[in-house]
Length: 456
Picture 1 (cartoon, rainbow, N blue to C red):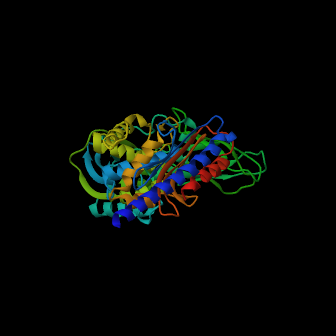
Picture 2: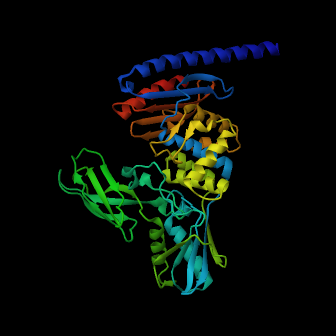
Picture 3: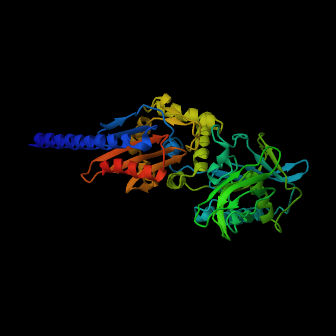
């Protein structure tokens, strides 16, 4: 009787899976025939989460731009290589130099330093801890600040990122020393339609950096259509272009900090006034490690599991680039994007993912040059499901269309990858990517949801 029952259950599973496959085929036939997809490349790969059996496959071996759905790979790699309890540690010490004692910083690439996402990482909290720690040393005068970057080098932006993205908040690259997620808010004022937009202030205050507004006021009902551009070589002045709605007194957009280490050091020196005086506010960046350091304070980040929660929930590109470089440091000895990519491809090769399915340029998916297959994404999602850190990984996935899935969006690219349990109790893992679609993104999303609804 037990054997008969198991056979009937297995038969029921196959029948249910067959029905889902049929429904997906019908839905995808209509989707592929839509005018929005006339010149597009579409891939959908679905497997049964329990058995691994393929439920649906369209172009699963075709490399495609993934946008932020790539983050699911970076997160899984970091969990497995670094461990869910991994913390970044930034060390502060005092060293003797020919010009006197200096503050010495050994950064770790921590992307959460002064982040507003946790109470104990916010800038005022961190600065208060640092001030209290340096007061304990009894030091009253320091010459300057030295930052050791030997393990991180001077790479700031991954290859393949486009110029239009770099000055905006989502274009902030990961460096040895990051500050306030390397972004700031720009507060703007607009008048009548067509009039110039003026800059009220930045939050936080930006040292040694100015922004020129060439933006104008659009209609009252328009959206934010601005773009912030990094300064050209040789100057420290950014440029704001585009439009914001008319007659706004405190319109806020966010940009990426051009030189986070400088902003950090100037902020620290300002905060320590009255406690410690500095003879110079100029930074010395060195690749040579100082061995004789009087360490007095170590700042630790939240656990990796908490970092990845925000990394996936809010799609923080900076976190992806920092994590990728950290993987490179752990596996290759140097924190570079290329080392991270090489380590990641080698790691997943041992788990059954062909390296040719992972043509990577970054860790966040912002580069339009990334090419990844939906099969690779689903394979990694399946692997993650069997790991002890899966509960934290799964929890970090956002919910769209009542489904646990990570979204991805760049120009003419839209994707969703994740997990779904049907009303019948079957569990599925899927990845759906669309490249080079036409028309409205919002219209496309509704059509993608209609296909994915067949998994419910």
